[in-house]
Image 1 (tube, helix red, strand yellow):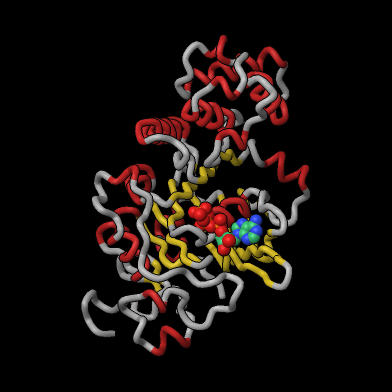
Image 2 (spheres, protein in one colour):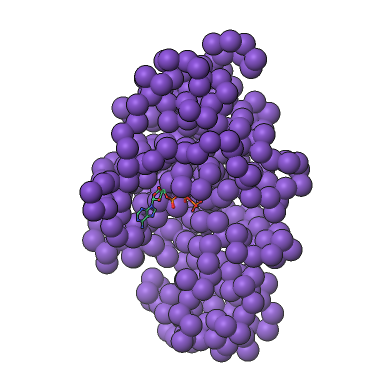
Amino acid sequence: MSVNTEAQVHPVRAQQLESILEIGNLCTNFDLPGSTVRAVRDVSFQLRPGQRLAVVGESGSGKSALAMSLVGLVPPPGRVASGSVKLRGRELVGLGDREISKIRGNDIGLVFQDPMAGLDPLKTIGSQFVDAIRVHQDVSVREAKELACQLLSEVGVEDPRRRINDYPHQYSGGMRQRVLIAMAIANDPVVLVADEPTTALDVTTQRQVLELLEKICDERGNALVMITHNLGIVRQLCDSVNVMYAGRIVEQTSTDALFAEPAHPYTRALLNCMIDPRTTLRGRLPAIPGSPPDLSLDEVGCAFAERCLLGSSQSLCHEQRPEPVLLASGAISRCHFAQTPEGATP
Ligand SMILES: Nc1ncnc2c1ncn2[C@@H]1O[C@H](COP(=O)(O)OP(=O)(O)OP(=O)(O)O)[C@@H](O)[C@H]1O
């Protein structure tokens, strides 16, 4: 099945700007002894220059596995089992480690949840920064250091000429995240992939880091893929949204439409869990009743059917997997009853 959704959702917009990233029928599995966890299932979408796309969903829905698949960093025993990731037309799936690492940190910048995971505790920030720049740019150590200081200043690290000689533990969590963001943009990537970049931070620092990401995207014009649990972040930072459930994208829509007219029952359940969509920047999603399916089992019907208010009593939902449906709003929803008006019996 092919879900070439961007072309379906926004045919006019899709023609205006050629996409820079094209994901086609991507499947990522974790091969465990005796079972295979199918973490990303037949995911397709496109990203245009400057687009800010959120990927949202509950824990375990496959957001991180998708993000890691985009940049060739799926940890073993995981692997991209099939499908395609094309950056400016170049296929990344199947590239060797050396080739993909040239692209990572160059055309695609990465910001992770735990800034410590991206830094070597035994090296100064300066030496790590210089290395990260010189892997991709033919510049001297002195020039790389100068660029590093400029970037640190850009992301709000005061006195960068002194701070560059400090070790990661001498920075606060928020400052370490700023350093990683500076490193991620050092080679002017066309896409920034941020996987829950503020989850480990306190509320005030979260807000500052989000404002920084927003400023960077505004000023540099890079596209953003923002992996998050947090619909407040989606509202603040992103223009479009992929909602993931059980490894699949169940809704693709604009941020405005997500809040105004959520199409999929799962999206509506997520929104219902938000206490106050205007102020819940800090709010992780509270639980939706029931639990997601075991991703090592084959799907029969809609993966959300058991938990769905609309379809739990419908035999169709339990028997037949829904295909994506293009709605009048421009959203795509993977629901048998996507066109059913709210409150009506399907
Ligand atoms: N290293 C691994 N080994 C085995 N299974 C894994 C591994 N990493 C992820 N998975 C499985 O893949 C599925 C998707 O996980 P993933 O981390 O992508 O979800 P997520 O939506 O990012 O969740 P969270 O928001 O909690 O990070 C889950 O069922 C998870 O258990």
